[in-house]
Image (cartoon, rainbow, N blue to C red):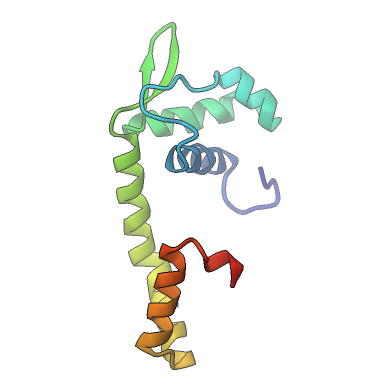
Length: 125
């Protein structure tokens, strides 16, 4: 957790858990670490973690089985991907397009970039 960030701690926890789902560390049907255990791991109040879990449940990403705990929902991955895609198109892509225009990048430049990403070679460049 970045305690200096302007983003709320509970939202950072939401982002962290969604990232774990996107990376396959958490999969649909998996039981999620308990509220108290995650609070101890992140060194935050358990109410903060509970708020994050409630947010994820309300979003359909987590299911709560009373008395058992929270589980990753069947539709979690699709929901997260749809949300991330929407955020990318509305928040990140416009800046990218502006940068492409400013740098006068060509379609060849962009094709090389996309090929590198496709081949998992992007970080090496």
